[in-house]
Image 1: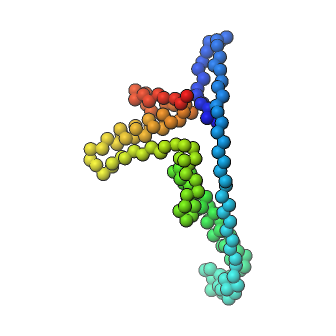
Image 2: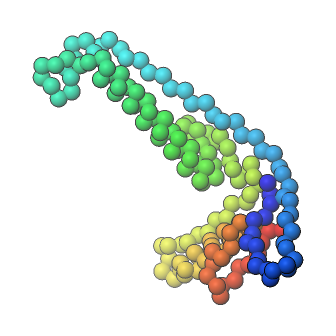
Image 3: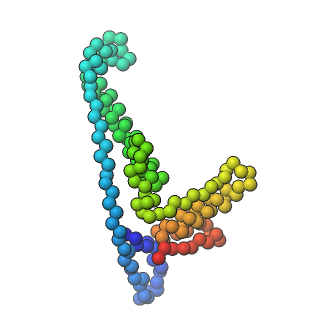
Length: 159
């Protein structure tokens, strides 16, 4: 819900209590992608193949299956990590590079870019960092305040 979360002030006993406000809802639907992956154990992976690190023992079927399953698990894990990183960046990409979801478009947000110009000697990096912090605080809609140290005021809370 598009509500505002903020801290409640203290009151004297029997003082007036704050009144809760209700946020407005906006439905968004996301289809969870299905990511199947199959593998097979071929006869030539087992027949007449020595076990890894051995000169006399033959490869056991259970070890081959375990290796395949571990490889499949690793592929799913790296795919999940890729999708999560895309979500953090705001643009979730499929394995082929096509866009699954652009979260900026889905949530009607304009991305903020700050050029730190780190290759330029006169760049005020602290000022650039404060610009990023101000933008974050201004767009948290009251969910968290006080990111910017006192004295640098950027107190705007979404209505």
